[in-house]
Length: 167
Image (cartoon, rainbow, N blue to C red; front, side, top):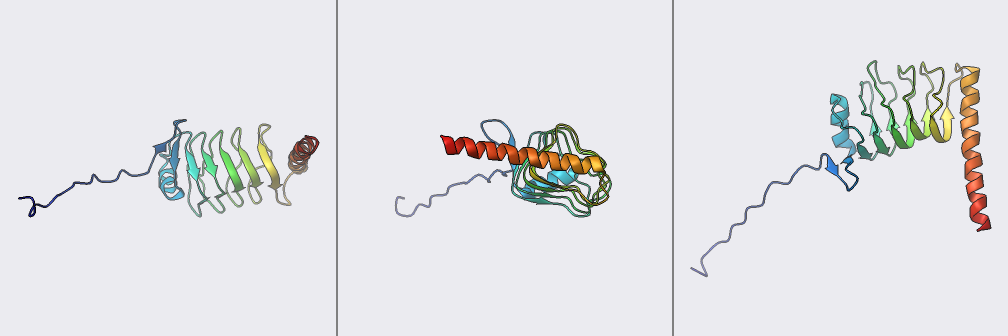
């Protein structure tokens, strides 16, 4: 029986990567996985998405605390688009030409484009890394706030560089 036996191993089906959790217990998703959940409105709160997300002519629904490690493009999305509080985008947040009328609380992004939207003021807790793009129809106060945020960021970066130079 030794020479003629066949060994069969049963390999269990691989579990989907969807909703993997790290030690901080935040579910992680690829852009492909996250897109399906966002469009169905079932993305878990405090999710981390590693990669770029792009939506066109849809109405994505984000969950509170979503962290996107990449760019977010929502250009030309339709009514029903919902951004959530405490969102963090580690790249460009392109919200241009969307029906948005306001930004969520505690939004953070490296760059923000709100040209062609109905947004007329920025929340006081908005954090933008280096650039805000507004269109020519933006209010004077909105343009001033965008410039102030950019100057504040530039000043903080200059101070940080100066601190490193003296160390």
